Each structure stands twice: as structure tokens, then as C-alpha cells.
Length: 470
Image (cartoon, rainbow, N blue to C red; front, side, top):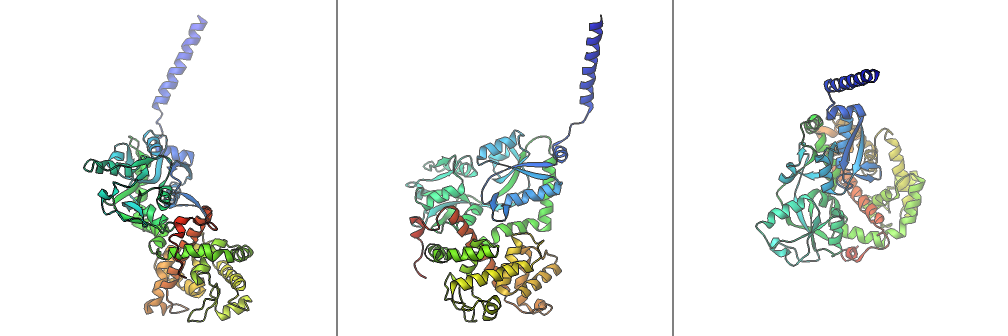
């Protein structure tokens, strides 16, 4: 009798619990993210998405995700995967809150996941080695080996083309990314690969022997992917986020930040630069490293600056009278204690001190890498002119601490309407913009070469294109 009463009580308790839980509203995905204080996102480790840069984590997708996390007032946790199928499967199954991995919107993918508003337009491009004859059409691919990333939008596009062009064949690589495949084409292991235009624009500085044969697709859109479920709470928040980002101009600013200096880089000069990296840089590398360490500067940045100034020629001289490896004026050299400007060690030490002094003059709360780009602009055009440009930037509603905004104001120093209101007057404001953007590219290329171990052992595929003309 007692056991029956006890069992009845337990049964009522369980039933009450079930009823109570049924009446308690379940949190939607957005509420779960806010309650946990954490946004978990899938991405790829690549130059166009997320990677560890000299100033910390960076990449277009990383910057977008950081802003979205801040918009939600939660912390960001990244989960990386190089397998595109795995990324899409995790999103489709609800194992990931979202994927921000440079994903192209395709009809096939739209059947599996829900895409947020597009943030960037790209085109699929056929990449080939310029040592070989340029293919003009798909018919020219018959005798060459084409390899692409497995489970990519490139495979989808090729499969679509194959329906009408049955002789088209390719291989899918399950382990390599776009950069690795481009490297194989550069080394002539492969004849062709396909890359998105944004990936090629970033990587072509490292592979001057590569070029675009033709576009494989019409312009396509990149977007974040969400689970295509009834719960669209987080997705709807992302839609609002991107709409605001576009309306404010911040999305355009981000694209400019990551791709602007690359699009304006003189790729023809890469051949000469790589030749000089192999033949000139070793003579001065110890000097550059010592001077950089003494002034707490990345020696690769100092080397890139010296190359922009003189192509690592210690006897360089300009019509305006600046001389030496770091192209110091006579007055600046005297202030820095440089007695002989054409002495490479003296010039490098003086240039490093000068760059350090400019970095210190800008407020410490300017985030990197903006502080470095502003200091480099000041190295070229003068600290006063950069301060004038910052003031103009503020007057125009921009952020004077952001290089993307200041570089739009620097060219205005050529116009009387603007420079007459400044303290330091007229300046050739386009020059520091090009100056900084060239250094950024030289710096990226040098970092890449050193990471690949090419500094003192440049492979034949690069030397073949390294111009001996000094």
C-alpha cells in the first residue's frame, strides 16, 4: 500500500515536471547566444578569411565576425576547418551557429543552408603560369592538368560547364587550399587551377609568374551561412547587422582595408623586388634587424620601408637632395646623428630612430596597424601634413585614427579649398598614400617569403622571373 502511494507520488512529480517543462518557452538561437555570452562561428584559415597577422588575428571574415560579436555584445569563438563540405554540413545540421568562410552563394548550397546578405562580389578565374602559353578557352585545357579545391563552388561551376562541354576534366584536391594550388601552378606541378578573384588578388603578389587566363563564372556573391530552420532569430539579427554595415559605409571601408592597397600595387615591380630580396637584402639584413630591435620595430617592416625608399641602394639620391638607404634629408640626418648618409648602417639606424619617433608621436590609443600606417605616411610627407589630414578627416565625418579614412583626406592637401585652412598648407597628398600601400605589399611579400624559407634559397620558379635589371 505504501509503495503504491510512493509510486503514485513519484508519477505525479514526473508528470508535473513534464507539464511544467512543456509550458516553459524554449530559448531561440539568438537567446542562447546572448545567454552564453558567446558567438561560435566556423571559418577557414586563409588570407581572405582569418589568419594570424603581425598585429594579431586578422582577415576579412574575422573583422566582420568581431563586429557582429560586438553588435551582440558577446565574445567571439572561432572554429576553423579547411573542409568546405564539413563546414556546410555542420551548419546544415545545426552543429554550428554560423559559417563565415568566404562561401560563394550557389543554387546547390542554397538547398542546404540559408545565406545572409552578400558582403562581397567575386569571380571565378582560371589561373595559369605565364611561362606557358595562355589558354584562350576551355578547349585549350585538354592537354593540361586542372586541379581545384574539393567540394568547392569551383567544382559546382565545372560540373555545370561539363554538361555542355563533356571533354572538360579536372581533379579535386581534398587537402590543399587556394594558396597551395596556386603554388603548385607556379612550380609547374599543375598546369591550371581555379581561384576566386579576391583570393588571387591577395596571393598574386607572391607569385608574379601567375596570371588570369579568363573568367570561369559571372560575378558571384560571398555570404555567411546559417541553418535553414524555422529558428531564424540569429539569422535575422545578422541581416540587420549587414544592412547597417552597408548603410554606414563600414563594409566598404573593410573591403578597402583588406584589398585597397593590393588592387593598387604595381605587380610588374614584383620581379625586381624578388630579385633584390635574394641578392641585396642579405647584405643588410643584420643591420636592419639590429636597428629594428633597438627601436622596437618589426625588421621586415623596416626592410620594406628601406626598399620603398631606395631599393636597398645605400648610394641612392633624389633630385630633392635626400640620400642613402633610408633617404634622409640633411637636416633630419643631423638631428639623428647620422654623419654619412650614404653609409648603410648609419642610414638604417637613423631611419629606424626616425620611424620610432613618429610612432611615438601618434597617440598610443590608435590601434595597430593604423598607427603604423599613419607613421609611415608621416615618414614620407611629414608629421604635420598627416595631422592636417587627420583634422580634415574629422571635419568630413571620418575617423582620424583610421588609415582607411585618413588616406582619403591626404590627397585633398593638393586642393586650395582644403590646404588653405590647414596649419602646414599644401602637400602632394597622393604620394604618401601610394608610399604606404607599396610598403604594405613589400612587407607582406617579405613575410611570406621568410615564412616559406625562401629568403636565402629562392626556388627556380621565382628566379626564372626575377629580373636582373637593377
